[in-house]
Image (cartoon, rainbow, N blue to C red; front, side, top):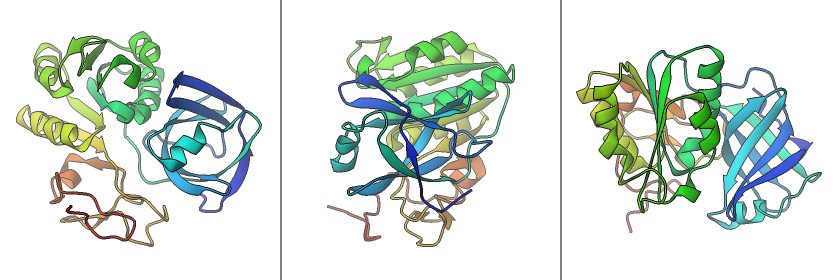
Length: 262
């Protein structure tokens, strides 16, 4: 891990939709674990954390959706521009056989790199992905090529209509699965954890909080009930760790460290 900021040229930019792009860099360090993240510095703007969406043949990919001032500025980044990278930070996913990967929205991003590693190791796994519409789910072709994949969308524009959790029980019942990975919106994660626990399955989840330093010093991302610093001991938690968290479903802390209850 390196907490020193270094600048790298953007090797290429790929557009997934009008508001979602991938940025490619020469792999900055070896052995980047899926689920870990880098802090990306956009000169003159800010620094924000992003999960790694893939590492393949020495090239690292980071995928960004425009949802705020920083990410909207990222949509203007072009091939050859210099961006700062710090990381990788945190702890990522481990590897398990007969797993179900459950992703929602941009939570799909770290699961894509995990899926590549599971496939390379010859592991059996299945995938269940959801979004508001088909355009919200990136890497559809990769997941479909690598494993049996089910898509679920709020508006029914891709796959089944509904919510991911509506179809998870069927997946568990119909397949010989022994482990669940999940990443996505917190409401979805709470349901996924509940369904996995009911089925007696172990799981690992990746979730978000306000990340600042990336090295566990500032305490900004500590989750109540556990003392876990998400940037250091997360962002991927085991079932045992997730069950200690007492702030599921509560408003997140903002940049000041206060919980915004408005």
